[in-house]
Image (cartoon, rainbow, N blue to C red):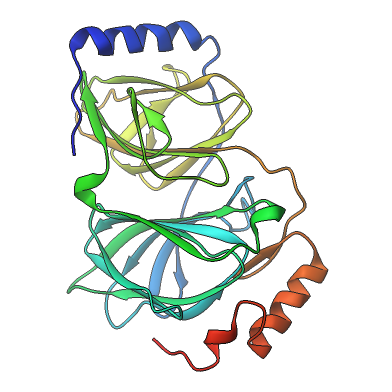
Length: 304
């Protein structure tokens, strides 16, 4: 669904945004997400959740995944956080021990709250290579043991807006005057931008939030227009400021995601797919999973 606005409305929006953006965020750190093996035969480019960047509060993992059958992500558990799966190419079938099953196709979104526990599988649903992004978002201590929940949005229902060579798909949060219906327990923005050659973007981000850019296609300049361009598969961590500025000075399309979130500021202990606040809670989670208790009861007899 593409929403259009009058030129006056857009001009007023950009004017207001430019007035408010007194201190654009600069890039404080960047690195290339290199391919690594994950799951069973899958390849991911992990930018958050590896040795260079273990945690970027509230973000635990960002994977750009590439998988072709028979490889995939067979039955595995989660507790204490949310997973956001955004398909770029192909399709993935998801199935869990609660009986939920569905296929996420190119452009579709699944926002899964694992909460107190889920066991699921994510496997290729089409021929060839399936590509997408998966982001793990930490949950505050009071939300870690809530019941699992899903929010799913089809490609056609993700709101979009275009203006002056810029297109945005609003996965979560707000941009260009449009807002996503996704509810984020940990306040989060997730924007998919495409900039045509010569385009210049300004996007506000709450000052207290952490934010990053991950480049999917092309090359762009971020933070300071005199900076060197950064190419695809790089993550750029953004410093303090009002928002983000980006320029596409190349002759090709630039596509990237801009993600921001309110830091939880809580202790975090992670053991693989389990993320809690203390080691004692992790030990309890392992005990629950191994003994099929406290949220993992249905894992005893379930197989995808």
